[in-house]
Image 1: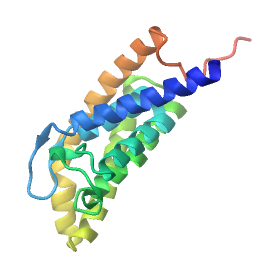
Image 2: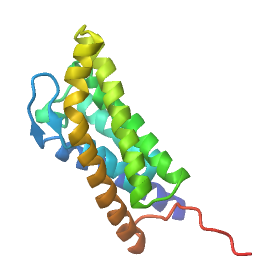
Image 3: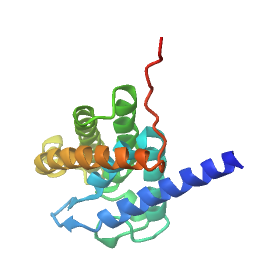
Image 4: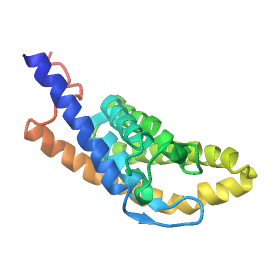
Length: 191
């Protein structure tokens, strides 16, 4: 029974963070090719709070919901055409970003400093994968792809990395204190 409850808890947590990402993706500032959204903030929050494995699963679920046509992507879009369109690379990157961000925290420490490092690396991962996809989908030069797919998002990305770190670490601590989330950090062994 304990194992069943544990699996159910993981499913619920991943579903909640996929839903959080869907909601936050609707907070959008339209730009010509790639809009500014709160999606990446949601990805950082997810990884900071629930870690690499469950964060990646939550982002995979989010991507699947949109691929099946639910309007969960930015500007209430959905369907496979979004994934093969200009913004698809960013959406695919969310799985890798969540995993990398969470993994950095799991290998170091769940504190504000390391969360900021992890979320900044995650931002770079998202921008690199998204820009590469954008370049090939729209047949842009590297300069044009970087100019449209990365440069406009650096300052906002750093702000979102800080917010994801600060809010994520605070929420994670509260969830652990309330016994709603397991503390997966390794505790030093007493001698």
